[in-house]
Image 1 (cartoon, rainbow, N blue to C red):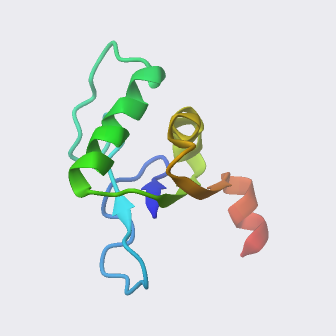
Image 2: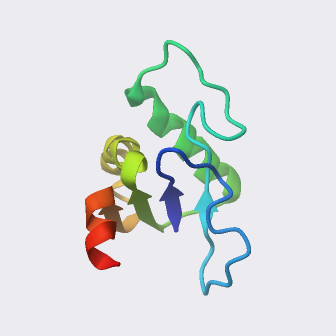
Image 3: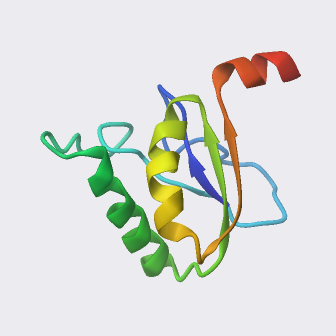
Length: 99
C-alpha cells in the first residue's frame, strides 16, 4: 500500500505497525527528510513516485491518501492506472466523522 501522508506529516507514519501487507510511506517534497525542490510543479511529482516504486520492485499496489496528501495522490493516480488496484482518499472531515 502506497501512502500519501497528510499535512504536516512524513514517512514515519505507520512505523512499528504490524500489517499483513507492505506499507510504503514516502516524504512528499519539502516534508520530513525530503528536499523542498523550489520551482517544481505538482505535475512533476508522479515521476518521483514511479521511480520509487520501480526501485522497490512494486508492481501492483493500493493507494491511501489522507488530508494534505490527497492532492498529490490525485495527480499521481491517473499515471498509475495499470498498476493501481484500488484507492482510498480521506479528507480531514471524513476522518472526524468516522471517529
